[in-house]
Structures are given as C-alpha cells and as structure tokens.
Amino acid sequence: MALLNKNFLDLSGSYLFSTIGERVQALRLAQPESEILNLGVGDIALPLAPAIVASLKDAACELGKNVHGYGPAEGFLFLREKILESQYEGCGLTVNDIFISEGIVRDICDIQELFEPKATVGIIDPTYPAYLKSSILAGREVHLILCLEENGFIPLPPDRHLDFVYLCSPNNPTGIAMTRDHLKAWIAWAVKHSAILLVDAAYEAFIKTEDVPRTIFEIEGAKDVAIEFRSFSKTAGFTGMRLGYTVIPNSELNALWRKRQDIKTNGISYPIQMAGLASLFGEGKSETTAQVALYAHHAKKLKACIEDLGFTCYGGIDSPYIWWKIPTNNSWEFFDFLLNELHIITIPGKGFGVSGEGFIRLSSFITEKTLDETIKRLKTLGVRLCAMK
Ligand code: PLP
Image (tube, rainbow, N blue to C red; front, side, top):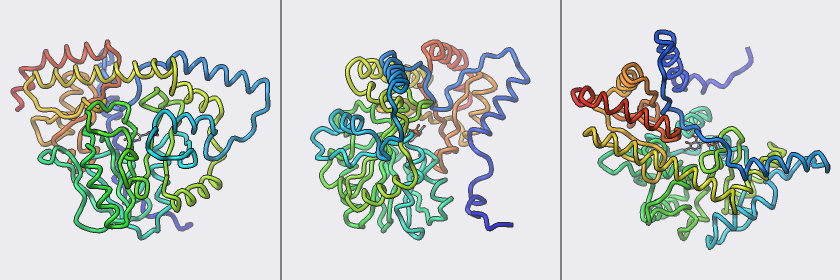
C-alpha cells in the first residue's frame, strides 16, 4: 500500500452535517408528512439579486462574442480595484494585496502552506470547524483558545508563542464580533510573538456595533501581521456561485501566496467575477444590502422569541447566527428534542468545538415563512421547553 496521510485518522469519526442528515432522514422516514424547518446549515435562502443575474448574463453573452481565455491567477484587476475602493478605503492597501478566490474555505485551509510543518497554530473554540480540521490534516501542534461565556465569548491572546492564529469575527457560531480594542490586543500580541493572525471576516456585512471594525486593516500595525479572508457567499448570496478574496499586505507572505497561486490556480471564471463586481456598487449593492438586512431582521426576531421564552442567547446582532444557551449540557440531546418535537433542524454547539457544549446554533438564513413558522412552533412548546430548564 502506498504511504497515505495518517493525519486523516486523527479527524473525528463522522462529519457533523452527515450525522445531522442521518437524523433528519430518520425523522422523514418515520413521519413523511412532517414539514421540517431547516435552521441548521448556514446557507442562503434568497435567490440571486436581479442586478447580479443581469451582470452574469451579460458576461456570458460577451464570452460568446469575444475570446476570453485564462484569467489572471490573482483575479481580474476590475474586481480587485472595486474591492479596494469599496471595502478598504483609507486602510492603505493596494490592489496587489488582494487575491480573488473561489470562495474562502479553500484559502483558509491552504494558507497553511505558507508555514513550516512544525509551525504551531492557535484555534479559537468554538468556531468554524475548517481551521481545526485543516490543521489536523497538516499534522500541526494545535493550541485551543477557548471563547467562554464568562469572557463574552471573546478570544483572549494566549500567554505563549504561536506561529499563527485563526480568528473569526463575527465568529461562527457564537455571533460575537471583536471590538477595536480586542483586535488591537491581538495585533500587539502578534507583534510581540512574531505571529500571523488569520482573520476570517466571512460575516463582516452583518456588523452593526459601532466600535467593531469592518476590517482588521482599519487598525494600525495590522498590515504587517494579519491576513484577512472575505467571502461573497453570505454578503451577496454566492454560496453556490463561489467567490471570495484573501488580503495579504505583508510583502513576504504576499510573495509566497502569489507563487502558490501561480502554481495552483488558473483564476476564477469571468462571469462569476463580473457578478461579484455587480454586488459592490449601484443596484447590486442596494439589493444585496437589503438581503443581508432581511437575514439580520430574522436573527433579531429569532433572538427575541428565544429570550421571551426565558432563555439566554447570544449573537444575532453582528451576525446571522443565534447562539442559544440550552437547558441541558448535551447539545445533541437538545438538537434531537427540537428535531423530533418541533421538526426544527439546528446545529449542536459541540459540533463547533468542545466549548460549544451546552449551546445550539440557529441560522437566520431563512425565508420569512420559515421564520414565522419557527416562532409559532417555538411558542407552542414554550411551556415544555421551560420545564426542561
Ligand atoms: N468562514 C466561515 C466562518 C463560514 O461560516 C463559512 C461558511 O459557512 C466560510 C468561511 C466559507 O465561505 P465560502 O463559502 O466563501 O467558502
């Protein structure tokens, strides 16, 4: 047998979403008539905005008229220029700092290629599972940075050296975003320890709180020590279209990533980049902003409903996710309760890390109809839920 990557064996047995899928399937088989509401996976619920569809169509027609071959590995200049102008005004970045990608999950994992195999990684917990899984696959020494309720779920810089740290703000699943002061503390820590901060800003469009920066590059010193990942998935409904970008102002890291891109990508399709461009200005910007606002409104209503039932929940302000403190310390048990009693799919907090136990995540990427029905069901079982406390 060829030598295989044994690090795969260190990944926990079953994939979170397949376990959830099996339990949902069991309910469907047992009660085929049931209407199951999906507040689990954070996937969009609204169709693409009209201005984006128009741009996509125009770009496709153009391909039928003129030859467009391979595009640049770092993405088309028109898109990078618009990103710079619309997202990073006053941050002192250049178009060369921006690399367009097929959505950021790949970049988030592959960015580890910039670091030596023995480089140590810090990972906040609970958080988006890709950081931990890709680190395990790379066979790295992982140091968990717990985001606990008593610290408002804010990750605090550790009292030790690490080579790089994944931060997610607003964090998935807690929905908590780091303020300017929190980010300043991380930058100071990174400077002191010659470390790199990998900042996943997939949900930046949801930020409302005043002292929460939209980008870490608003803060002095960040350009030397931070890499930021931004996605069109949740801001413009591109989960299926696939588009994102990674911003690397540090010249040494930028040069390495450029080499890597030259080897490993032949660019992203022209119509998709044109569609992304349409989301950044004019009608496309207004339409996608309205979509984000609708999801944010759903989050607010869900949060209010759960609080009215007498529970504590977090998130839902700078984020599309509600982090519900459940009345049991077994999030799979509560997941099953909501699934089987209310026919509502959620995600058990444990799926996001050890510190996620005792919570479940609800997604507000739902239609108005699903929102109303969810609230109706949660209210009818209010008494029963309270009895579980
Ligand atoms: N980062 C976070 C925190 C996410 O929650 C997700 C998707 O749910 C992603 C990244 C993936 O983004 P993309 O669709 O651009 O790959």
